[in-house]
Image (cartoon, rainbow, N blue to C red; front, side):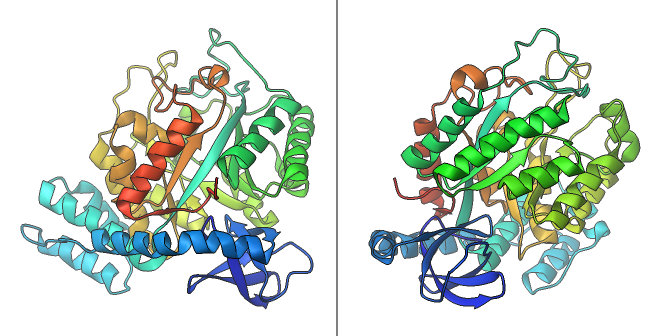
Length: 435
């Protein structure tokens, strides 16, 4: 984990550096030449992205110092407050106490947690997850910006609004220059240090890769930033080319660990191919963001448990689990939605299976399902949020599910509300710099 403030290099070990933030030590991968102990750097997504002059770094740190410790104090206070065991059954207490003292959970434990429904036990689950998040990862909260560069998609997924089956959707594709400008404005004007470039899955993969290479290279030529791609299955060679161009993260959900269910939802696609892309991205050096959908038609509790353990086995950097919300124009438009507590239980369960490392995202889909999802999720073990910096005229056309949260919100409004919430919870935004 890393903060959106400069850190001082304390040690260099091969291609990794140990960075100090007001006494906290974090590790990051370094690809820059000439770094030495004592240099100040920005690190995002586990990568060193930029060396900064010491006078600038010290001025930023001077501004941050008081608020840094005040936020940590508030977060610690909230995470340790009133975790009551009154009215909670012994088995649940035993499972969660084991985690508090450094133990692990198995599939049966997670299944039991996901079946809990009484209010006192749910409160105990969420507060324990939040306590473990604070104990192991402190108060940093990742804030990524996402840019939806095109809504063209060659896939016919049974629930998605930008599916190739949706003939009524107006399609768009930003020009290279337009996408680069949106990204560089986000960096210069709003302080973003980590961006996700997203699209539907391309039909002509070679042509699309050339387009994306130009965008990535254009952004990185302007200013260092951590770039994550989210384009579906672009082929293993495509992953290689975009890594070489400068992408260092890949967001691709496997969506379900159930092969039969995956095939029913994704015509002419296989779960094996999806997992091959995810695993190869990890081999190349990408930080992988992945996860599943909660509440798919035909999904069982055992499926969700397997999803939770699969994401850990994939060595993901960030866990992205959100509710299934079908588009009105899809074949699954009448399917039932999951309830908010099931989504929250899954977020807490993710914290329980990987309490030391996991970045857990509160998805926009969850915020669409429940207006209080961001706060609830952050208090149930999550520590990451995504802001949509796609211009409104395009964002309205990236219609993956109906009534998306933040669909009409400008970037200033999103940042202001996010910062206000994080400050109220004692969290420090890790991917937004000084504006």
